[in-house]
Image (cartoon, rainbow, N blue to C red; front, top):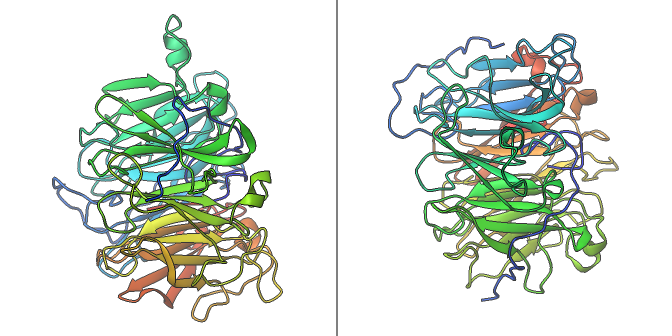
Amino acid sequence: MSHRRTFLSRRGPFVIGAGIALAAGALTVPVVNAATVSGTAAATPSAKRLHDDFNGDGYPDLAIGAPYSKVGGLPTAGAVSVVYGSSSGLSTSRKQVLTWPGRDTSDTPATGYGSGLQSADLDGDGYADLLSSVGVAMMDVDDGCAVVVNWGGPKGLSAIPTTLAWSPSSEWHGQFAVGDVDGDKHPDLVTPGADQWLSDHPDEPKEEDTTVRHGPFTRTGGSPKKDYFTLDPRDALQNAVFTAGDVTGDGIADLVVSTSDPDEPDSRGTALFTGGKEGFTPRGWLKDTKGRLIGGEDVEIGDLDKDGYGDIVVGHSVDSYDSDVELPTKGGALGVVYGGPDGVSTIREPVWINQDTAGVPGVGEHGDGMGSGLSVGDTNGDGYLDVATGLPGEDFDGITDAGSVLVLRGSASGLTGTGAKSFSQNTRGVPGTAEKQDRFGAETALLDANADKKDGLIVGDPAENAGNGSLWVFSAGSGGIGASGSFSFGAATLGAPSAGARFGAAVGD
């Protein structure tokens, strides 16, 4: 996902580019309006539910953001469409469309509902809930950014979103992370900015720049406890990319923040903060074996080598930084840092992977955008997590920025180019035809919609059809992702607003 466009696909809805100053020294990685849900079965919640199963029927569901959708006269109010999973996978006949209700008047304008989609069971009822970033003015104050949630249940997601967090746009740009960062088995919400705490507690210190809202949440948006802590001076965290996942293997989510190093403003860096009952412990900047910063515009966490520790995958999709002359990032790249009990592995070295890596299809060319729209999942059922990445700027057959998607395989030795697969609209069996500026692959998701323990590939292309946007669905088998039987659809198929909606700009599983 390119964080230099207006709407981020997962982390937040606005433009980024500021820096972060760590509270600890650098870490060099060691070398060693809702439609009725049709065709969905009601279910009694059990103790354990899939984190992306909104209606509790045992099948993961797919949420699709269209943040430029026109609603009630507002040209960019935004919308979310949900396609529900089943034993036969995804079908556009099992759907739900959500828009920003009651927010179509001039005093409460909304912008970009459907950005930054993520899912988690926030209230502990056994149904996954859907979180989104949105830009909205609240309580007759300055414009700001919010995280809102549509609550899951046996009939699908609630029609009316509940606000979980809000701050003026000067404090943050809508990015957030969700994970159990304190080890109490309930997902927590981490956002830059100190929320309304700054005005509610005027006598308290003002240096805190990050808020943790601890779960479980109530359906009014309440949280039993908030913590405020410092990652960085406030003006530097507005544009950071946040994600959470268990890097240390202790069952507690850790926080990864990718942004610019203030000492090297034309570069990107990634910082690791390990979670725990007492809060976050800063582990410093991630670096490769030559001491170079590993940073980018997207980041995901998943266990690629099946050793019990989550691995950090950084998408360095913009290859025009001054620092890139020293990095193997031509055409974009993935920087992979392997996890370990103290945060990073002392056994496995970090690696860079781009189209010039052995086994990876294609050739690295400036502007390809490899590292965009990252997603992690097991595409062939072997227990090793794989990585999908878009290359929305990929040129081929004389077509500029037609775009493609790569799926790289995890293995006992980590992420590898061996067995990598490439897909575009010119791949046999894929619907559509590659055209100039399509930018196919701007967003991806890996989702097991039929619960067969193999993740299919979802590709979002918000630029398709003059900005209306479109989505592609690829199935998975023992051999991984295949083009046979893939299908495509847009917002109009689901009865959602379509003109200029940029359907597929966010894909949340």
